[in-house]
Image 1 (cartoon, helix red, strand yellow):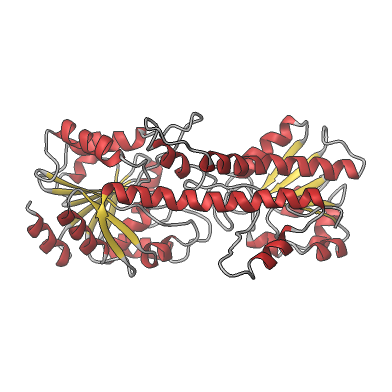
Image 2 (image 1 turned 180 degrees about the vertical axis):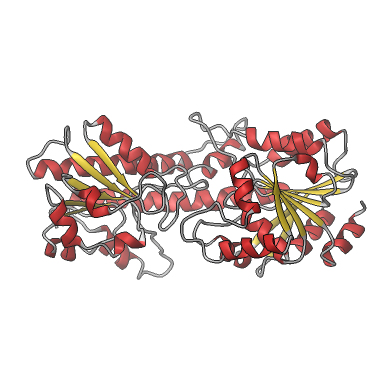
Length: 443
């Protein structure tokens, strides 16, 4: 299909759309385009997820404003249906790919899901289809990996038999719909004409700037913005470690530093989780793996942030030792297993690293999270008989916790706060001994 014809179908809401990957990004994207009036088919490899979606039930738990109702509406209106069969994409004019692109222990991108999706799609995509990747990839991946697979597997030529674009997502669990609608997007195309077509498409659901660029620029923008944030977080976490050592209060230091123009220290914490920030800096670095570019800041920042959950385990050990209890044999309650407040998303959860560190130190670990299956339940009951509790996530339930009730359940009154959830004075008033990231016991 020539691009002008595709543009006309997009403008008239007649373009038939497909979305591959119905997770935290793909599902809300599919729902929003369906609500905008497009006929949408979603593809996923998980049969249980497909069944839930076709029943109008969101598989994404946690507090996700608007998503459940939106999904129910578009399924009822028959604008969205889910399938496990790639053949259902054979009549689609626009196909968006949103699958996970993790990195392994060697910091190498694992594109298995992306490559599998591309190979399956190449066999069924119609002539003139527009393929858009939203998954985060290393700079150069669209040209070096995505385009060759689509061309070679399907026997088609890019910009002639099909069109290719890259429009990385900017979303966070808990704000999926709001982020998709209100956050600006970089829109990369295989040609400027393709990028402009994509702008017209995304304008149907995005109420913010849409900047047309080439694919490499879009890849760089996505990985750079998350690497930038990772570096910022690493800085304040390192300052928190300094404050603990010299008798400072990182929260007060941050407050006063931020009064200086042009300064904006972020919040310190017990580690960085999620699918994006722990991974995207390595994707950015991977883009120059064969080039003479010395990388110092990005690896250093990753090292600091990866260290923070282990530091939390050390804080628990210090708190117990101060109370005359060795960590070996101690029973520790970890509050929060998702990486983000009021979410069920456990990808790269710092709590997983913390729990493993505590186990290696000989502690017994109890985990509570109100949103994660297997860790739910009454938190006071879980705290019963524990020697310490460590707070890893700012869940609203934890912010509203009865601290006196918590104290009465614990064997030792020790609370270690990795997110600045509580004011130390209120913790002390409840009869608990407070230990917090970035706070020295000298203060």
